Image 1 (cartoon, each protein chain N blue to C red):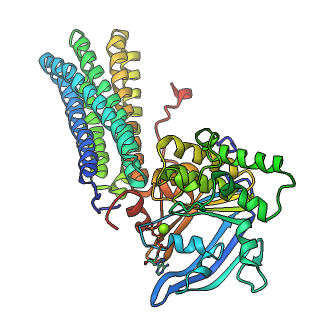
Image 2: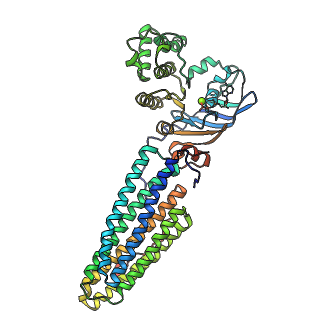
Length: 235
Length: 266
Ligand SMILES: Nc1ncnc2c1ncn2[C@@H]1O[C@H](COP(=O)(O)OP(=O)(O)OP(=O)(O)O)[C@@H](O)[C@H]1O
Ligand SMILES: [Mg+2]
């Protein structure tokens, strides 16, 4: 990593500014995810509504990141690490925007689920999974802030745990549905929620890979470990 | 992941070495201006030399056609082969060499002659044309390629020194290509040109590379990135890094290269 300053100090300020926006976005997304999971478990409709409303702030930040990056490319013609910062920031912002949407979707479904009778233990498991993924996202963003390739690599490894949590939940919901068909509706919603949280984990992995690209100039070459394949034969 | 094989434009069409420089050193009296430069200039390729002012770009460029012979204090050592033959061999006639390895200087230096004669001079003395009509044709096509024709076609007999700085520079480009050199050395050819003329000269450079090697010294990172397929970064008389242009500008290996191309204090 090049820690020297640019001769044009405004260039440094522009680059730092756009990275600060992404970090801010990350904070909002982490909060949205944990709040949405909390709202689901606690049947807290007001909190769910707040998460839905907050998503526009995340979207606006992504638009701002893109605008700033366009300006940077047009006016500063960034090269080497600077260019990678710009590209990485745009990709991370796109990932975070998707994660924000998943959190919003979770909040929406929690409002629907509140009108149904609860599926035993499910919302607690969802919240644990959301917490795990939230930590992954936080690590990925910390790795970005500190250009920490090792931390980024560990995010890629840990995503496997999330995949396993998803597979376990999938089986749990299947069991509930087979036990009592009145659970089907709620379990379908819960399953989408679990799948979306698993997707957030994938985005955390994408962000971690971008960090590796940013720091080294190359995307990681070895494929990341996979454990998310729900065995369709067993279903 | 399967990658579809594509022929990218930045690829060089030949990997034939046109100029092979080894352990080139230049001293100007006590000043050790160039230190052990090794580089292979490829045929049919545009090579950009970049680096901070005073790092030795012009000095090295001048070695490639023995222009340093004319600098009394300059001492050049090492070897430079053009198509495998040593250009510093005593049997080589520097004037013949410079017809093959043409040059456009950092400062425009038209002859104190008419615009027409500036371009016609080289083909005339090297006997490259057989008739006045043929010579006229060469002059026109070179002035067109240098993006100057429209501005001077009605005053070909007026003195070249009466043109504006940017026009003089384009006249020198026309003069340099008039002998159809195999290698064209250009020392900041666009520093005095407006963006349109710059784009036209860059287009010319791209055209020339289908047949020739072009080596261009430029202080514009964007220009180096746009026109060249190979880039060499010089720093304090050393060739620090030499490689494929895209790689140099996206992922340079040496921190000094990175500092320079990203505009940091090196
Ligand atoms: N004719 C000369 N006589 C003595 N010293 C010279 C001569 N030409 C160049 N030098 C010295 O050699 C070094 C390299 O100069 P050179 O002109 O090659 O730099 P450059 O990279 O082309 O710089 P610029 O980008 O400013 O044109 C400098 O220290 C310069 O002072
Ligand atoms: Mg120079």
